[in-house]
Amino acid sequence: MTENTVTVREARAHLADHINRAEKGVPTVITRNGAPVAAVVPISDFEALEEAADVMLAREAEAVLAEGGTTVTMAELLAELFTEQGGEAA
Image (cartoon, rainbow, N blue to C red):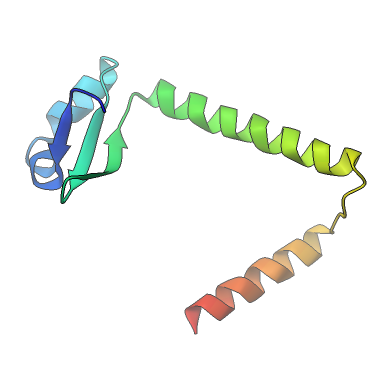
């Protein structure tokens, strides 16, 4: 784990300090009951992570299509998503 680890309480009390550290490239891991639950990281790290996730998902989608996997229309996808959300809210 990173050297800069703080509790939620400490993070709240010194949020500006942790943001300043992130701007300098130093992440802060935030723990609750001793378990890591969040992090304040440099925005460049966050953006790199999002980009890597997008690339990975695109590769997975290409692999499914190359294997003859099924496809759905956007309307079908949205209908399924809204159905799932409606089921969770109940």
